[in-house]
Length: 316
Length: 291
Image (cartoon, rainbow over all chains, first blue to last red; front, side):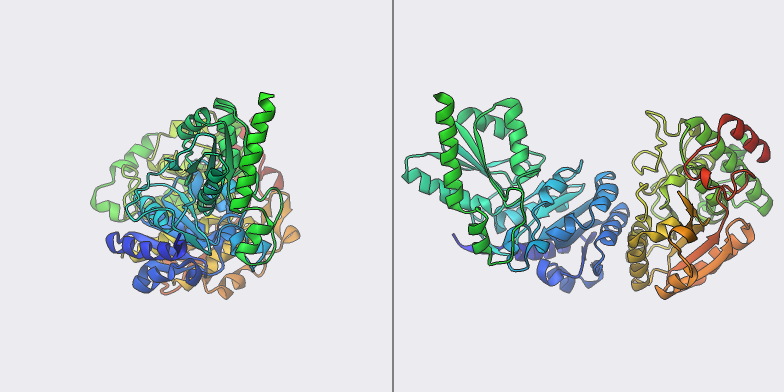
């Protein structure tokens, strides 16, 4: 699979959107050369504001601009876009429903060498807890472009989480993204792997490994964590024997928790979880960290097998 | 409330370019008394709320709504309206009183404050109350919102002015100073911050808890033009706002020295009335003093 940077795609998409819509304003907290809002800044300098290291103020400014009719994109690293300004997100965006899109890059542990301080692994739990927010984690660059365009054209607060590293393409150019609709990437009847973000590509690799071992997996990309496609989850739970949820996030409050809540309520089946558990990671190369903290295709394979075992135990 | 209707009828489309009431000094004093009576009645009826900081803000808000700002209660989203942003959200009672008296909603609604189903929440909510520009309650956020609104005004070449009312306690929040830096950076001369400097916060005197002095020099150091005034003297309030409108290339802060609980003898400078309301007997005495 070819690898393309989701944040570069974001930067380019913003420029495209900026051409069409003069009311788009972009804010950044002095990281625009990393979040790639620098493309927009270069093209539309009068509609770009570097807010400096003022994430809290940036969110408040974004709300003020949005209340004055602007469509505001505000970007920084995911760790600062969530933890640093949570009360502002709650008061100014969640409680008001104002039209602000927080598009954060450098999500998860694949930030790498910068270490635990820079690795956003709580962001999905935080954003999903906020009423009114739409939360999207694109699986690749093609989905990123689509999601950013949808966000620009739909009123209300959004959180989109992107990565630092390049991400394998899992979609063809003609892919059409539908907000809130999970995508079946691969049919299968034994176990369903539900994944989001960079874990989608790994789930696809895992499913091929498992196929060779006689286990037929369905792979589902849940790009929209909120609102969650409950219908697809329930339907899947009634068609497969077990579910594995894979995400680059802590165990609690992210995709795994959200899927489990639906499965437990509507159609209980054995589940396993591939995530960062309840711990912070460390410095290292992205791939090394994914190995060390058990977020590889191999870890998904193991999780699928353990789900099959649970199934076996239940039957016995 | 026939007074309100009389005043409203003076409004014409042309008059909307200026304040639709344009009260005289004597009438401003009377209006402030009326708004203070509302505060007492509202908070005493609700049984909870923050009367002290509402009473200290009353003269500033009276000046803005009944002399300075242009707006149209029939069209709360009018794009060219001047904006009033209440950052100190616990002073919601005075904001609601001013909005009701200026015609955004019926004065009778004021006593629904804090009750289930009311549009008048304990702290302001922009989605519920006509005329409320921004939700507030968690302190220190209003100035950032004001920076965004003022910036939008500049981008769209509109000549509205954005007024943000801060508490002194809010000047302890880091975000207030983030916003202060940014307003100076973007040269927002269409933004006026007003600090209701009543010098008392929830548990005591600000100087004893987290001293803000020298407050004027702090704002100046952050790139603002700072004006100290007596926040209960309409001449000084109006002169400072006029001055603020003339200052170019930088934002202006009016540090309004006020008295917590102003207007009611036993509430003045009394820390008890930050977040506690008068008893029915105290309310009767207060209303008598405000006749």
